[in-house]
Image (cartoon, rainbow, N blue to C red; front, side, top):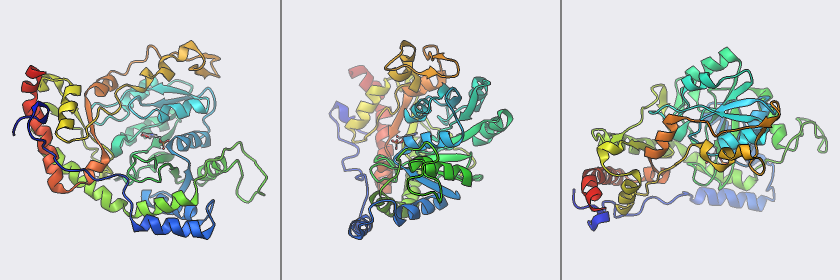
Length: 411
Ligand SMILES: Cc1ncc(COP(=O)(O)O)c(C=O)c1O
């Protein structure tokens, strides 16, 4: 396989990966159309995107908003989560899944994840339910569904609302429906690293008209359908996106089917290339998924078989021309905002119902802690590369695994 690039050998991937974000004449012409129309705000393009995106996920309604974070806040409020309620979230996710809960005055409670899907573990969710639990937010990490059947079963038994954080699951579909339709509602992000983007943006999809109407109201300064312009019947905010964002998103959406298929193909090539390596732990495919929209390609390392640390493994991969990273390297509750919550402002998180501060120092989700130490992420733009390049990527990973012992001796 040749000497590792980190030790002076040749780079396995001596070419550029696809640039992200992707755009072409479609974005340009739609943007110009908006520019010239003078209708820059709250117009038909936003409505069209909401309809088309909801249909893409198989949902009846879509309400756009500024980003994936505000989509979660909007959804929680629409579901009736109020200050003092507890909301169960995984610790292996972006900060927004938990911080949005705090923003609306509720309290995030962390439940562990499954080692082979990296998504919320229903058994730990059940252990974390208290009389104050109002909602659960499963996160479909990198487009792979959480165990929605078991989470929905628990939700039914304990009368909890389920909202999917589907920020990575644009176009993921299972036998029960599309991402965002598997609970009561689901939220998506269109931030620039995401597979469909307008730089920023978000949407909530649902099959419930009442929820959609409430979200629309919250995102539109508390106005309600049919009310006069300066009638504000709910406590809302301004979460609207512009026609420019909608124009870009419409062009991006038209590319999604093709991009999803390419990323799925790349992931299959990598799965096959890495399947026989004892040092690499491939994640389980959710059997009910008929289409998996990959965000990152994620695998775990068995460091004892590998013989070197993850950071050295990643350094060696980067030297081979592979833009690998550690991804989320700490459980959310180890971030200052939670770890120092007991100290009080500026970090203080108070549970209004309990009337006291919240203390996350004893929270322990051992699976997530291990996952944060041993996962490797390959970003989504790489998965858009030509099949021959993806094969070279698989070779590069195999090369680093094969050279790990020598690297360990020389490091
Ligand atoms: C799982 C998850 N949830 C929520 C968000 C928040 O989305 P945004 O950055 O659009 O606010 C992100 C963004 O990275 C995410 O990865």
